[in-house]
Length: 365
Ligand SMILES: Cc1cc2nc3c(=O)[nH]c(=O)nc-3n(C[C@H](O)[C@H](O)[C@H](O)COP(=O)(O)OP(=O)(O)OC[C@H]3O[C@@H](n4cnc5c(N)ncnc54)[C@H](O)[C@@H]3O)c2cc1C
Image (cartoon, rainbow, N blue to C red; front, side, top):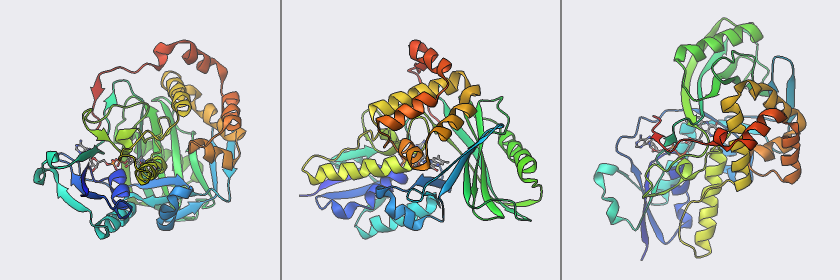
């Protein structure tokens, strides 16, 4: 007899998993839209090539093989022929996976229509809760159409730090879709989200200063908050999946790759006869290194620009992608550690209080 599985949540992890229902002959899967879920919004998502992301590459709208980290003083440009950076829309992925899930017999229900006790296993993909004092990655972005050629479509500006640094580590992220079209996001790492006008003004000043651009049409707006560091399960009594099972990379906020790996590994274990579960896709050493980095950025955000620039200078494109993807071996990790400013890291290493997060929890909408 097949086992009845319920997935609470119908976001990235839930639908990425449901799309694979065809490889789980012994399970009947129901995806449940949770009570209280906010209206889902479209966003541009970025990721680097990986074996587990071939399907995503197929629906990516744009791809680049060069990216840069820019500071007031300098610029680190990295490139890779085999590991491109891709961008697609969240809704493209969600709808693609929903279609596959339906074809594979997955049921879709509202939480009010089901009794969770009727299922043999329930997995919770609602967002994790966030400890007080956690560092948040918060951003606001616009897609623009300029009236003249201004963008360089060959190179993603992954982090351009030439913006105000008074409210925490702040950079602009530019995805140049063409010479005239781009996504421009103002992104901060700090404990407090800013007023929308702060990001919007930062973007318009940035476009004016570095692209001589004042005349453009805004075709789309997006904003978001990604809590960083080690988070709490949404409900400690329900097994998690996706971000709610630790998939978000603690110091970068990238989660898409790690969600797909988490699902791939869960399916491998089932095929070998183990029960279905979703595990933390990050190694302990990556979590530890990320916690050190986040502590430095929280207490001394002014080190942010030089720290990321040095990292970019010390690695080539392929090494950088390995580091971001959790695939870095000893040599790449050593290069990153040796490139870092020593003083703040010694402080957080020798004072565990600086890395501590409070136990109380605050939900982030
Ligand atoms: C704006 C934004 C941009 C991102 N960009 C990238 C990127 O470029 N690259 C990358 O790798 N990662 C990115 N991420 C991180 C990551 O890929 C996503 O957070 C990913 O969606 C996590 O998948 P998930 O299934 O765990 O959670 P989600 O996709 O968020 O799904 C959560 C589910 O819980 C439901 N839910 C949410 N809140 C509640 C609530 N309060 N009560 C009940 N139900 C609730 C939702 O409706 C949904 O069904 C981004 C995240 C955000 C927010």
